[in-house]
Structures are given as C-alpha cells and as structure tokens.
Image 1 (tube, helix red, strand yellow):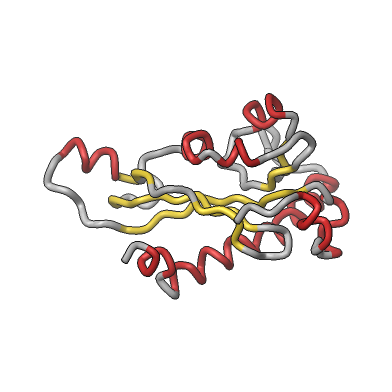
Image 2 (cartoon, one colour):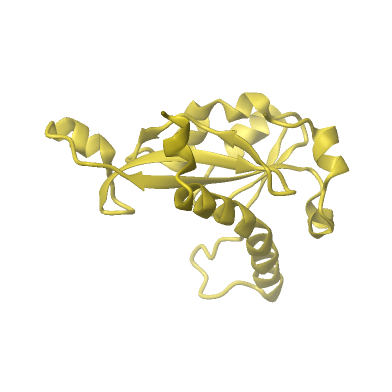
Length: 166
C-alpha cells in the first residue's frame, strides 16, 4: 500500500516541483468516542485539542492524493510525535525522502536519523511576523497539504474507518 519513490515520481503533480522528494503527506485526525466509565481510560482518551474523548489515527497520502498509510487507532491523548513513532511509518521511509506535515509534528530529529527530512511551515518563534519569504513558503505548503485534509474529511464523511472495522 505504501508506494515506492519511483512510482510516486512517475505520478508527481506539477505543483510538487519544489518538493519532488515528498514521499508522504501526513496528518493526524481524531474521532469522537464515548467516555469510558473507568477514569484512567477516560484520561487516556481525553483530547485537550477536542475537549472530548477521542481516538486518533495517522493518515498519509501520496502527492497525487492516494491514501498510502493509515495507522492503528490510538487514544486521543497521544501526541503527533508519539503516534508517528508508534505507527511504524518511519520504517517505510528511505534516505532523502521528504515528509510533509503541519506544525504539530516535531519529528525532524527522528527523520534525520533515517536520512530523511521534513517539509513544515515556518514557525514564528518569538518574532511578531514571518518574513515575506516565510509567508510565501507557508502558503505554498498549505496549498499542498490541503489534500490530506480533504482525504481525512472524505474518510469521516463516508465513515471509511467504521466500514473497515466491520
């Protein structure tokens, strides 16, 4: 299900010319779940982002928009970095691969050990504004990352994960 770099290059959209080594675009998504009676389990499922009990899944797509990775389901309290580590996707990546992510994924250190790297929008840090170049880079990355968000939206709308579990 996780295509080779050669196959991805063959179908690489023109919009990815600046990021031709992008192997996967990742995002995590959460699904609401009932709160368990056990308070410890409630704490593990509780997502401070959603203020509700959730389950979390890591989703990866190719630059051409095909779903190439879906992790196991984890408790909603798991961080993006931890779900990345536990999902096993790092084992599927090769040297010089690029992984496109949102700001919540602080995974550069893990990728660099593998010889891969990250494409992530610039951070403000303690500055008030991004530079014009950083603003342009943020817009470019956002235009490319929107596809993984659309895939996740369709997964939720058509209840794809629910159908897979039955």
